[in-house]
Structure formats: C-alpha cells, structure tokens
Image 1 (cartoon, rainbow, N blue to C red):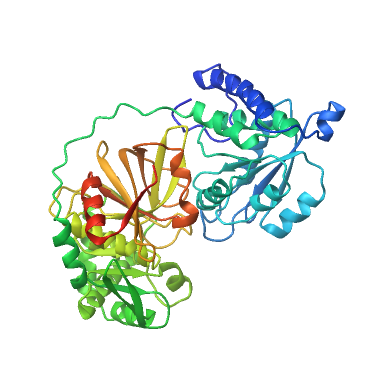
Image 2: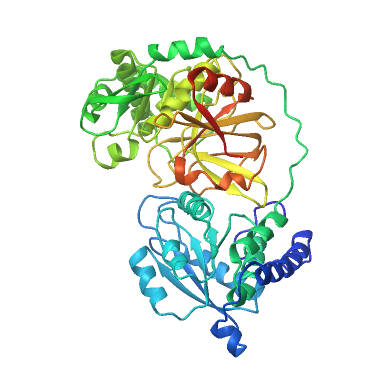
Length: 516
C-alpha cells in the first residue's frame, strides 16, 4: 500500500508488494538478529513460549482534554484498539499485552512488573517521556510514531537514541501499518539473540521506496551575492514578544534582536483602527478559498492583531516579529492569535514568526533577504518512510511562496487544530518545485540544510493546518539524526538555494550541516 491513507491498525490481507517485503524482511530480521549480537537466552526462548511483548501507549489521556497535537478532544481509544489488533493479527508468534503511561513515573511502574520480554512504545503525544524508561531495561524496544500526534518527541528522542547507538532500540515512522508489523516481527529473534536496532533498520530501509523520478518545475529564483546579503544584516531587526519583560537579546547572524513585553503588543491591538480591521477582514472573506468555524468577530480581531504587528514593527524600525503566541493567548496577555497577521507580513516581504522562536525568525529573515523577499515557512516536520516524504506542518504560511510580486496559491482560514480556537491558515502550496529547508545556530555558527521536491498538501485534520509534503533529496534515513541537536522547527523556502547558502556560509565563516 503506497497511498499512506490507510489508518493504523487496518487489516491488509492481500499479498501486495509491501506484504511480500514484510515476509522477506521478517526473514532478514531473524538473520540479522542472530549474527549481530551474542546470545542472551530469555524466558521465552527457554520455555518455548511466545515472547511476551508489552505495547506501551505514551499519551496524556485516552481522550485529550487540552490543546496539543493531534488536537483537543481527540479520542485515542479507537487508534489503540486498531493498533493492538494489527500487531496481534500480524505477529501471531508474539504474545501482546497493553498498558498506558503519561510519563517516566508510570512507565517505571509498568516495567518494574518485569512481565515482558520486549516493548512496543507508541508515541501518541509529543513529549511524554516513556520510551526512555523502556530502553533502559535493555530489552528490545520498537519505537513507533503516531504521525501528527507524537511526531515531535519521536524525532527528538529517536535522534538521541541514534546518537547514543542504543542497540536495543528500533524505530518506525510510517503511515502504513504493515511497516510497523514488519518491524515488530524482528522482536522474536531479538528476544533470543539481540541485534534489534540493526534488524529493524534493515527492515525499514528495505521497505522505504527509493527516490522517485521527479522533474522539478522551472523557477526563476534570483539571489543577492553573499557579500551584499551579509552586508544588509546589520540594518535588519527582529522584535521578539516573549513574556512581560523587555530588554536585549543576542543577535542572530548579526541581526539585532529586541525583546518587548506582551503589554506593548496588546496596547497596539486595542488601539488598532476598527474600520481598517473590518476592511482587512472583508478582503480575507473574499480571497480565502474556505473559511470554516471562524467567526466574523475572530476575523476582525485577527485583522486588528495584524495592524498591531505592523505598528510594533514600525515603532522599532524592525522587519521581523516573533510572538510567544500560545503563552500570550492562554495567559490572557493577548486576545487574538497572531497567525493571520503573520500570513500577511510574510506575503509582504516582512517576517512574522511563531512561538517566539528567535533562531527560526533569524533564519526566515536572513534567507528571505538572500532570496530577495521569498518568505520562509516555519514548521514542525513529520517523516513518513512509507511515502518517502517529510511533511512540514504548521498553522502559519504565506500564499506567495515566490515572493511579494509572485503568484498567489489558494489558502483557507480555519481554527487551530490543536485547540479549535482562533484563526489559522492552511496554505495549499505549489507542487513540483525544489524547496530548501534551513535552521541556524548562532552559538555554533552552523546552518542546518536539506532539500526536497514539493509533492502534495496533506489535508489531515490532526495537528497543524498547513502540511506541505516533500520528497527529500538525499538519504531519508539521515533525516532522523539531527533533531536532538537542533530542535523540531525547520524553515522552508521555495527554490534551489544550495549554492547561495553555501556561498553565504563561506562569506560568514560558518559551517553548513547537511542533514540528508
């Protein structure tokens, strides 16, 4: 199954190419496990009984009561039931039991029962630390991403395990449940002989499609010279709205950063011209392809926030603003989400950036300058090996990906998926173009870099609204390795920026780290 739309746990009875591979990979697991590690006889091997595997569901609660990925109100129970059924039916050689844990304390109590020969840890919310406890047992652990639910923690934690070379940790990040089943079949030989991480890696690589034959569309990208670009950085400025305090912040790539309090932004929002806000809301109603579950009042308050952002930029002589949107909104410091305002700023050649992520804001501003106004798109990526894709997910995106004077693409105005409140943007970005994804670390003087060809826009209701999918250029396996060092965010630009990025890095004396 290549379409990736099959929900976790669906029965797949036909012998497809992937089913054939599953059988072959199970044999490969047995061979790899037997040669990769010295024997360590377990209870199951001694008695001839099936290895006991505990499925640990790592999540806040069965029905999510608060805002987070995948979304408020999400019912995990059907997903867990389908997953347990899929593993039980697909791996009859294993004896499965299940448990739920929301963090290390509950996980420790579960593993202390010592009634399992191995574990499947299903990361269903992002940051619940359960897998670490399972790995510390030394027993084989299959780590599975619930895509658009646990993907942030999954990527960060997996990169850490890869860096530590944990031999008992194998991982799966796939929309196809057959991939999970094929990896789980490596558990039985691993319980007996070890070698689990490499066995699962071989299975995953065998089941991941090779590069597709992509012909990218023509793109008239124009960039500044490295010297001219770097020379402009000192004239730019970032305003960061982090908390109730103001002050200075270290520059990013030589770009000055000023901290201002929520109160200043909120005062600008309260004083925004109401007639102008109504006119902006009128324009959004006319230009959005869809407006769903977002009231006219919310459009007008969002338009007022856009005007407030413009006023703050003008007051500080800045070209970029980043706001701690969740902390400000949930803390009662601001009263409208800034997302539609960010959408407008990015369309205009300015920068509006999420979550007061100053490094990502600097990345957006620096490389938008290099690309002469093309907007960066900050995202929380998700990796899907079944489709050989990286999906860039977030709730703010431009719909002028080629710059302020370029063509527009369709966009929709929806609530934030996580909390079903406010107004956010789903931008339906153009397919068939080369994209460049970046992140900067000013302390390390490094630029993280990968590229991908845009192939689709995923409309899945879970997690953030905009989901641009790209086929990575290079090694998708390598894409799992850097998240613990760089965090979850990446910034994506349309265009082949490889040569300009490397040239700018040389001019600055920085290093480029290629993550694919």
